[in-house]
Length: 618
Image 1 (cartoon, rainbow, N blue to C red):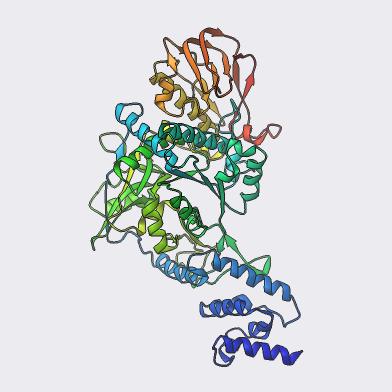
Image 2 (image 1 turned 30 degrees about the vertical axis):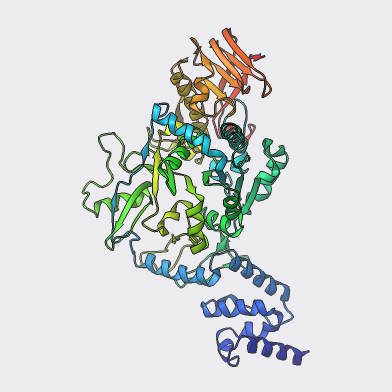
């Protein structure tokens, strides 16, 4: 037995062209003794790890015959980490060493760059320009594919489920994922009708999941018949985690509870680019005649009110990259879209994090840094991480990079010497950093729309939201739901309906505007033009009212509503609702977020809806 072990070890070494085992014996004697356990591929990985300064991974290895399965399992994990990262684990460690050295030296990633305001399109909801772009976008939609970035759990919200399962509003209880699919199917139907049979007829949806969310996302779709989408339209892209790093030398961290397992953490949503490329999905979409990829986040219930017009901007302006943005107050905690010009002539249009934008401006001849202009907002629009890429140039770029995105590292140092970390760190990447590698010829722009129509993310728990300075957005489940009612009320107002002003109320320590609870299915009011075409005469809605429109072909004529009205009808049925309607309606009742007798998804809002009396039509 001993002879065969020595023989196979020697064979492994000779295959690797390592002259004798001396270097190995010096660097990792315990690994050398166990080499016979490993396949030739695993021996190659072992060699790579030693060359990258990772011999500590094997320091504790006992002699062959002890924990052999665990040793092999470590190499199975190394193989997964190696294959899931563009350029492999060696590339990850090399990049990590460079970025950790820059971090320790306090190097500014923007050295040599001067910021300026990039060019883009600023839209006003409902005006003629907006309507033109919205119309153009709906026509383009059948040539688009959507990508939902859904790797996160709702823990930060005080919710233990996946974020896309959270109701975006509690009047109907529709969850985010259903709303997104309803919106895509409404776009698909309208776009294909306008195109009259020319080009693709289904809009695909790719969902990026993680170990944390994958099975629950699949289960949510399967148990709800994919919310009406064909299962073949949906593709899952599961992101893997990356190795944690223990120190400035980028020594890979072992799991504190298992010395045969590398500690891993999420790499960030920038992985979506490499996954779209390596899975072949992007090429498949291009071959099918698709032109656009629309990326969106998991909990922004207003997004699809902004997508058609933004897509119209991309198509009209020929943008390779179009970032949706909202006006941002100077120093507000949201990244600013900025044009950066380097001393060597390089330029790029990217998101600069708010805590980097102000010092960058001060260092570039703007003594006051990030300040509001005469509009009352910063000239650098706020990035909301909803992106539209043109597929052709996107695929061309990913073919060069393999989907690798410029990374960053954010170690938490023990002290000012920056020699040791409080806990392990890892490299991270963000999907909005994709333009960093683009050539100057790339057409990169943005589309700004008011936040009331485009941006109401749900990401803060009640306690954190209650600490937000007055006047700044809460970005909580409370504010996210109220934003839906506000947007729908303002859209109806613009269409000529007399909608009462909101009242101010406090829920979970957050003061919010409470508008009438108006919600509709995307098939009823996908665009502003749709809404305008379905509202006629003198209509009014009181502040205490609730109106739910689930009938796609419903026309509202001279309606005076004071109470709760639910309009249900099958897709093809024409419905007209009119006249004065009054009942006791639905009321909003405060809930304490610490009250564990109430479900989490209700508790995190601070209110529940009591359905006292309603009229159901037809």
